[in-house]
Length: 363
Image (cartoon, rainbow, N blue to C red):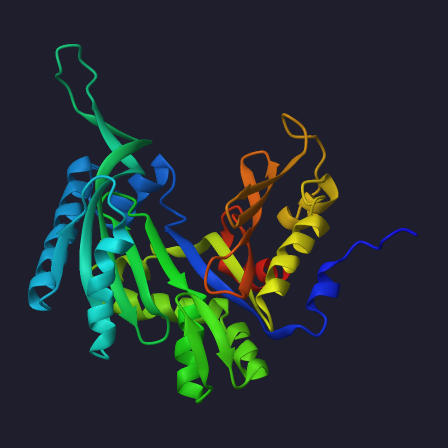
């Protein structure tokens, strides 16, 4: 008589003490949509700022003004400025500063990191009509990868807890933002009076699972927009209020969103069985019909090398890789605290934050 395959639902049935789905790490891009091509740069310098000649020297002055503002901000608020060494893990360097500020029960900038990084920025070129370098100069702009200064403002927010805002000091001043959905939910639960036992990055127990899940679900694009507005008003920035009034400001889009499903079992052996069944149930994740769901578009042509799904095991780490063009989705075992948890994360294309709830639903 044939033995029926054990599914994820069989493992979960009657053996789960806590099942919680929450946004985990959230990485966001900040970009100025009307400063992306050379003609827009010229328009910014002439029509908006009012200079008769779109000289690259103007951009240099803006960059110097921003660097000076960061230095004064750090001095006036007694904030340590740290230059990252090559290969250093930035969060490890900044963790003591974040813990200190959080331990004091304060919100604000814990430390400012300075790094030299490659960024896609505009470079200005001066052209002269005469072979000997004479004649009236003309200026042109094009985008290129350049090693430039980036400032990391590591901070403790009153709603999200630990986070950072990275601002490039070179035009058009791209921004990166890092947030954590679990930290957001922990603070919201404390405020709501919901008891819980925390993990390093998640929850082990709670006295109100339904209430905690509602708080996880309360993280919306509007919540992120409020975070941005708080820190736009507090941090030194290369763009001014006059620039914003003129339509030059950062739009926020998703760079990488991780959704974590935390499952606490009543016995450790059920966690191992869960991961085995989870991988077995998702061996077809690399097929075109599944990729259409994940990426929200119809797959018309097979990727180079065909459709590939790989199941890998290293020690107690189980990884399921589905390859599609330049993206990869994975299902992994989160090493938090036995007998906790499974997580599914994805790296979507850059898209507006308004798609945040849809992205979570796809997980």
